[in-house]
Image 1 (cartoon, rainbow, N blue to C red):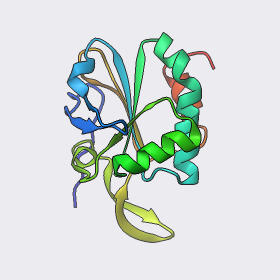
Image 2 (image 1 turned 90 degrees about the horizontal axis):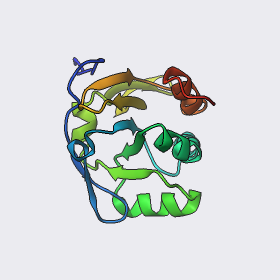
Image 3 (image 1 turned 180 degrees about the vertical axis):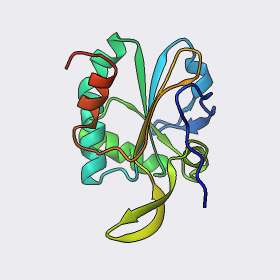
Image 4 (image 1 turned 45 degrees about the vertical axis):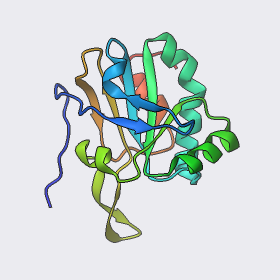
Length: 158
């Protein structure tokens, strides 16, 4: 099965997804700002919690540098509410319950899990520029240390 992969320079596929607070976010509404879009497999799991907490801790400095952060998982909004409350997350959490956005972005497909090939969410991070183009596309990133590495890649002081 061939997977769609986005590369720098590609137009970022637009989406509108529900948040944990009942509103929706449309990517194209954020034009003029840089947007970090990251896909993670499941709220409340150790790696995803670490990654979400790292993004939350970096949010003020990322926003000061002109970045918005959107975390997208297949979790329902109700679970995202619990995730936000449990871990005091300040990033925007979006629900892609049917995985259609993940599929468009190449963040859903075959991966190895405990030695077996399964279909699942590929932990991926993208930076979308002010014009809505992909600036950075990173697939199969590690949950731990990823935000620090991304900040270095973007030339932001740690």
